[in-house]
Image 1 (cartoon, rainbow, N blue to C red):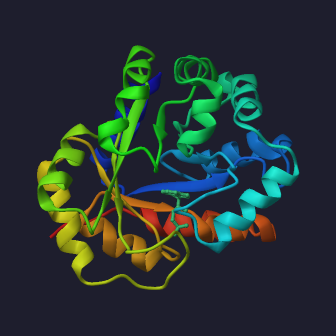
Image 2 (image 1 turned 120 degrees about the vertical axis):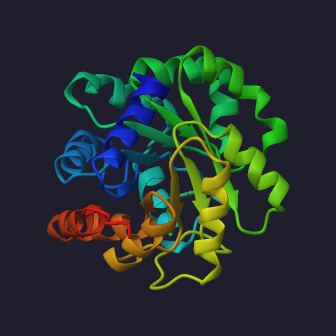
Length: 263
Ligand SMILES: O=P(O)(O)OC[C@@H](O)[C@@H](O)c1c[nH]c2ccccc12
């Protein structure tokens, strides 16, 4: 369970030669009652883990696709505590690691200590808190540690090298390499600086390095997996789910995770 489960699952996949693939979905988009079905679909399709977003009214890092999904989820009344209850209700039915992505405000309202405990009870293996910088992470990090939940760090291309090295050393589960300058959202290509950025992060990190932001097709996923260990895909997945095109998601995961032959 928890941090060890996340790290073991990712490492096993890597050792078998697969690129890692972590889809992001917005909890409550289309109603929370679809959550179990969506997670099990992603598990069956070969995803390495699932990143589950908690809808929030002021999502500073989100581009239009994720923002709209958040609005749909909020309109359905979705809250952090409802998502945790729902996850707890089918934790025994799933094997795939689940990572919660939430802004700090919902955690503050819920209470950091209570949040970490509820995550453990819900079978959450890791968390991402994009608006909580290193200097303030002590507010939750102790509680996460007590409950064996991985605290995943985000590394941005605009940060100085020293800070990136520190983030890479501290990250648990995996390191999230933000591979564009800007907000989330599907793009068709990445800046050539990204490969060097990923290699640099890998040299400092003990956990897999995953590239996220702007990945929308398998070619990008395969390219980025040459320097890093795999990708995180949000907007594209959220869009395809909203359109009901599960077949395209299955194909994207399959094509992206294909055996990574390093020469
Ligand atoms: O949507 P994209 O460009 O594929 O990027 C992933 C992203 O959506 C997901 O990981 C995410 C959604 N909201 C975030 C906020 C911060 C960091 C990451 C995220």
